Length: 519
Ligand code: NAD
View (spheres, rainbow, N blue to C red):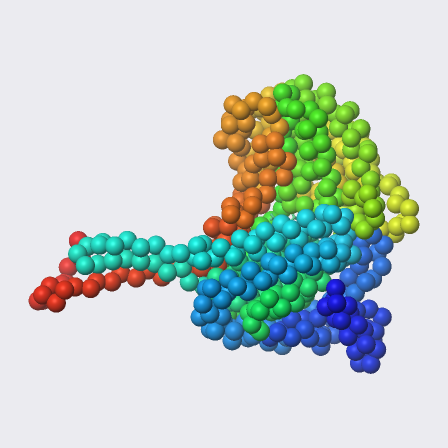
């Protein structure tokens, strides 16, 4: 708290004297261990999505500032990569404690800028914190391999080593969790890190940077720049940056993957989704409907793992009225209001887009069972609220099925049997997540074997793997070959050096040059 407060007070004080921006606190850059005011002439407003009031401003960092940030990463790299692994581990052991101590403050800031409910914002921090906790096992995770006696007197062993300066570009929907998927993993391996948070929700990343500094991360090991396309292009092009982690939309992710790869960088790109929940008629009805409603409408559907499409199989088609009744009970309110189940969408544009996609379903002949477009939230009339919406009789040709809606809208398809459901899902280009609800083990097994999706839940609606595993979205939801966090995360942020050594006894000295390939 005191940090944000100090930051806000300092900036508004400074602003009154030095700039026109005195009305609003300004987001700082974090360069070489200092929180500095940008000299940029281009700034973006930050809004509270529940009111649309401007609550802050974020700069588009200048080229000089971005160069200063990456140079700071480069300068810090030598010493940090050479710092003992136990010392790096200690930084992250302290860091995880500091995040725990400040979880409520971090959550409050997330709700203010992103809109999600406070309880869900705490979950956002918590799921990132788990990744930080996992980084504390780095002494096991970074072990190399050895194979003695490859041939006489010869051994081979590998070191897992950092790769240099790494960069992360993050989306608006998880202001804590997704940055925490990135820089802690990268840094604990010995890399230094340049982060560009979402320009719509930058404050949480700044708080996380301050806590990391307090945990003992040396100056320059993490730098933060702000901005949009220019900052992204800078990251894709700068030769000192060796790897890029991206999470966000397909439009940005495919572009970054291509531009970064062309410049010889490693890129991992987690992108959009359309996640299907298959409801079998033998499922536990009460449990399934509650899981489905929670996973479709939680966080107002602004989760890449939101279960935004239901496929009701066989007699489960008759569960629709119950699904609607349960959904009607959800309370829409500002995220900081007691009892809120879902908050607003991130922007008026996002709200407009969701309205249009709902209307497209109606126009294409689907049935609007529950329409959240006219929801009114008392005291927050200007917020970007959309109430829970259910569209049934949807087919896989409709726009509302094909596009990621990223709002509180559940589209419902029907299938005669499991094979038909699997066919629908495998035809959809996205492969982020899916869930099946059933009490039949053989059905679940068939489903997990045949469905071409990277993350599958069996009676688990949002199967985001814990950090000892990796986040394994597939097909159009992912580009790259090494996923986020877990073993694959360590792989992404390290390179392998393989040493083959021979220590011969003196009497085994070669007597003539060995000119043929050793066999
Ligand atoms: P976004 O792509 O608009 O923004 C993500 C980042 O990319 C931001 O930092 C932004 O500044 C930058 N950016 C935006 N447009 C760009 C462009 N045209 N060129 C270059 N950079 C650009 O995404 P968002 O709206 O912040 O996030 C929502 C999206 O993220 C959804 O599609 C969601 O499914 C996806 N997402 C995926 C995962 C996952 O793990 N698969 C997790 C969270 C969110």
